[in-house]
Length: 335
Image (tube, rainbow, N blue to C red):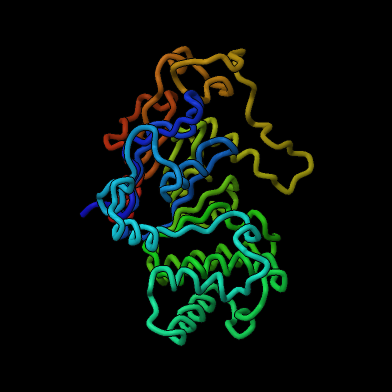
């Protein structure tokens, strides 16, 4: 049975030279629903990966597949199925709303477009169920305009809009970055409950390792379009192996005014930013070696559920299957 959605050796290049995603292979099966974080700093390729999965960007090389079929070769009926079942929640809860329409309009349009309700009463019930799923009361939400709702309410309505279609996968792009701290835990908890109750795989895209740790089971750390490290979130955040992941973890603000952010990471050994054919992080790495500049390090298996693209672990076996999603699925199945 093919994965629900899959990237096969996908690269995305903008302007002929800007490599946003580099030879990425990653699959999401719907037989083992889990929450996987795609993490990295700005420019790491997180949003590009999401746009490729949603079919908003066409890959420069490789292919994106839904149920084993190239999404750019789907017929009209297959495209409608793909659009319904692969849903996204975007970062800005304000940008998705037309201020002249009530909340009802945002929820009813997908129901109408995909013809999933036979009557207005059935459509109303679908909307009400979706709102209750995200902790909102339909009687207090429907009939209101966006400006009458808080940012947290608007973001949860955006999640409800995706849920009303009963999708097979949900892609959440920085869903809590524009709501206040008091609501972040609420929204993340609701995403976890949706994953557990509805068995929907969720890709959680973020630069925030703190929320990634609390929200997800597995994590993929990207840098300049390539996978630096991946594995169970507990292993990667608690015991990061790649110098880049260590930098990200050390950038988490701890409650100690005497501890400087990122102080554990030294400057690179005089390499500067010159181009090389090897590791993309070499110019910033305190452990850089000559071999790091000559060839891209493969993914080494530092543990059965933890891989790292760094020559510091070259004495370990390399990952036989380049599909990160297959690694997570195997670990989940063994557990």
